[in-house]
Image: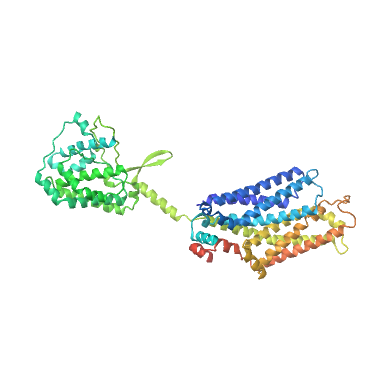
Amino acid sequence: MLQTSSYSLVLALQFLLLTYDLFVNAFSELLRMAPVIQLVLFIIQDIAVLFNTIIVFLMFFSTFVFQAGLVSLLFRKFKGTIILTAVYLALSIALHVWVMNLRWKNSQSFVWTNGLQALFVLQRLAAVLYCYFYKRTALRLGDPRFHRDSLWLRKEFLQGSR
Amino acid sequence: MGEAVCAAAHPSKSLCARSQPEDSLPQAPLRARTTPPASQQADGAECPPRALPPIPSGVKDDILLSHPKKKRSRSKNLRASASSEGLAEPVLHRPSEGNEPPTAALKEDSEAPVQRRQKKPRPPLERETSFTQKKTSSPSLLQNENGINVDPAEEAVTQKPRRKARKTKQAQLQYANELGVEDEDIITDEQRVPEQQCRFTAPTGISQPVGKVFVEKSRRFQAADRSELIKTTENIDVTVDMKPSWTTRDVALSVHRAFRMIGLFSHGFLAGCAVWNVVVIYALAGEQPLNVSNLLQQYKTLAYPFQSLLYLLLALSTVSAFDRIDFAKTSVAIRNIFALDPTALASFLYFTALILSLSQQMTSDRIHLYTPANSSLWAAGIEEQILQPWIVVNLVVALLVGLSWLFLSYRPGMDLSEELMFFCDVEEYPDKGIKASS
């Protein structure tokens, strides 16, 4: 059974990483006095997304549903989060590489092209969706039903096996 | 090897018990409990063999014929009480097998099937203990019931405290059982510690229950009184019961509600910011034709910070609005949008505003990098062409977030996420369901 204190701690860490991600997405364009600042911010942001992914997977592994072998049920429930996190991480890395490549020589130069603009919009939209789905998943995993055998779980299993 | 030693240790006890004067014979079993285990072979070296008191043969027959039923029931009761309390009977008396009177042996033979039937699978040591204990009880019973050394008053005295003890035991909850000792088994008299230790016996550990309980505190075992320990455990149980249960579900719910509060704040703040931004833009741009140079010069320091703030607030508001309609359940969300549910419409408008706002990132950067001398970015004649759509988009964004705020304020308490995520299966959480409804 998941302990309340440990869950609170994990949740706090997840929200901290999410907040950092949101902060960098919002203000990274503003904090470009030197290219290295943006580089560090981007690297930490990508690592934060990766950490959040690892944490959410560890939370999956600690559930009773996973330990009972019902991985498909977990995937069915949280496939949106898993897919979106992967897409968001890919978009973030792509945008960061592209932007840093263009701005490495001169951080105050105008580098926008239509392709970069499209990638930027997609990445920022994915960030909002990622934030929503990840937050929802983190909160849902606190549900005790995922951490013990219950009538609900059996019902879900039967629905899934049909 | 150990069994052989144990078997050899019995006779001396029975001998000691029976070598007491006749008037003290009824107490013999009690003394036999406290005497130390010693082997007869070893005794042979130090203690001379003592003769058993003769038992008349007629008595043997009587015993065999008349008393097996009673004895069986007595032994049965003893065992039942022991098993019901879950206590391991301490190894107290070990009667001999070799020196036992033939009556006992015969009796055992006659009782063997019954005992075998009554025996439950137990660890070997325990089995041996119960077996030997049965055997010790038999001679004492025999003697008592045959009237050889019987003192009925004394027998009643010996049985009464036991009943009393049982009554008190039942009254004392099950804590005494958990501590694993019966009160009557506890030896308080220090003088009963065995004095005669035979030198040539293998050291058999004497384990006697005592009135103290040893509790491990900071890596050391400290003696504590049983009654006090029972009191403390009772108190702990009470405090544990009184402790409110703060589950992970409650943590998640409180975080969700906290985020909803942040979202509520961001909705209003965003609407205000967007309106203020449009007002500033129109104030700086002026009437048609637009005063482009003034707008660019004044607004270039504000453009990027405002764009960043707008994204932050839009992201928070969108997530909050999605939470309210439980966007993850796509079918419900789409149905609500088509049903023109104000909250669903608000979240749609927020998402549209977010896309529009993000699409102006390039223009915002262009404004941010504006310098009158930089002709490559701001070629003469194209400023108005670039700025006109940007102003319109900003106006539309302001309208969208303003409308969304109005829609959300129409039903500020609506939160489908909370209902669907946390209270969807109320039948599994009857207490939570009551709380939710209240």
